[in-house]
Image 1 (cartoon, rainbow, N blue to C red):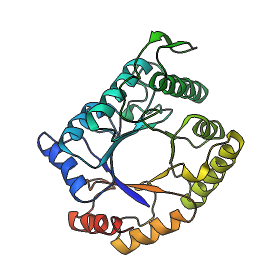
Image 2 (image 1 turned 180 degrees about the horizontal axis):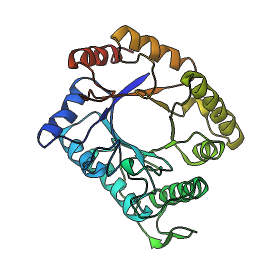
Image 3 (image 1 turned 90 degrees about the horizontal axis):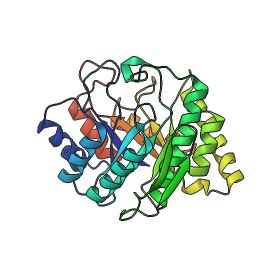
Image 4 (image 1 turned 60 degrees about the horizontal axis):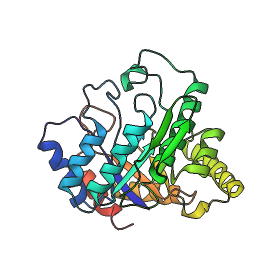
Length: 284
């Protein structure tokens, strides 16, 4: 089980930079940041790609990533160019989580002044993901899509990671899971319901079936669980964390993300306990 942490880009610099360095020192394999303009009512929110570029310059081992980038306000060409730059700056330590986005204003779902239906968000998600995938794999790229077009665009040359920076897709429905099997390099679980483990297990099996149909190797596809959104005791103690990690590993989860302690929120936790969990996680 690979264990990472989710950062809160709300502190002043250089304190925020020290947080990224501390995450690496604690032994986390990954450090993630929500790619939003606001989140859960907190605004402003430091821009994700800029934050990762700074973090990449301050660290040397930890892998950095977004949870998640969406088509809500990012268009494919500059996003692909930014991903390429981050890949080069970090020496190939970038993973980009991608999702369809939402419609909640507290998480910038409607910042463009319009609301997308679930079908529209799914359509945009699929086209956006395929477009960015091609921009990072091919050169030049010409696409005449419904939502985005490109004409002989060259972005991909010079990347450290080959054939491109990994794209991990956050998807719960059949269509998004099929897209993950076809285009994605990893899957991000969004737990729901009274029995989140059963919910995730069902989606894992859907992913397995989708991989079989598309000829993908299911076993080597990373599967990330976002903790902190259910009543499960992930951060109750190091022992509780290890039990939870083992339980989810049994259903196929390979990665887990723990939120950095945040006072006054559901992720409030003593730094001492958090660091003890990080130490245990490094042993898994």
